[in-house]
Length: 274
Image (cartoon, rainbow, N blue to C red):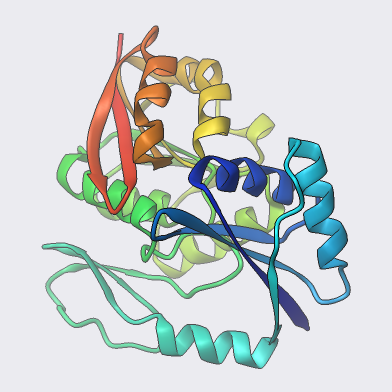
């Protein structure tokens, strides 16, 4: 199967807004990466889709003028080969590595997560994912109950399990992400309860993690707050540093929320449930 990769460059706020709309109008995946003062939006769609119609529809839904974009055709074999050449072992922290299946772990004494790149977001290479992983490496407590909301590849849920979480739930609105999480968790020997949002286990969690985008995170505050136990913690990523204060303010009624860490223009926001 072949794919089309669409690349656009926009200011950060427009990039986030359009990213959400692109997913809603049929994009298979959307990734953001800094490009100087701009944000580069990389969109993957089926080869038989109409990229101009997709971009125009997303722009129309958000009230933006249709932006310029570039298209690259990506064959399946090229996708795999490119991924393997670009995705090597990633050292997240002193004792945590993300290692693709075709590499030998560089440090046999470290905690190793085996994860191959796929269409679901989350290999540990993006700053927003790395910020959460570094937080988990420093702060996860053995025996905790953890919810990964917007799990993508399942990397955050898997690492939580590797670090000692006793019960892990993972959810995403994308069925492909749920499938990836099931496979990746099994490959790493971690038990994760994977389900659509309406079917996740009942009750509250000691730690809720969500690596999405600022807009959806703000909208999800009531739901995520209801899923966090009193005294439990929430950790939010996928947030531009310029958006951190707005996200923290949205969570302030229920959490002692603030900026936890920032790197390369991306922020990690979170705090304890009141």
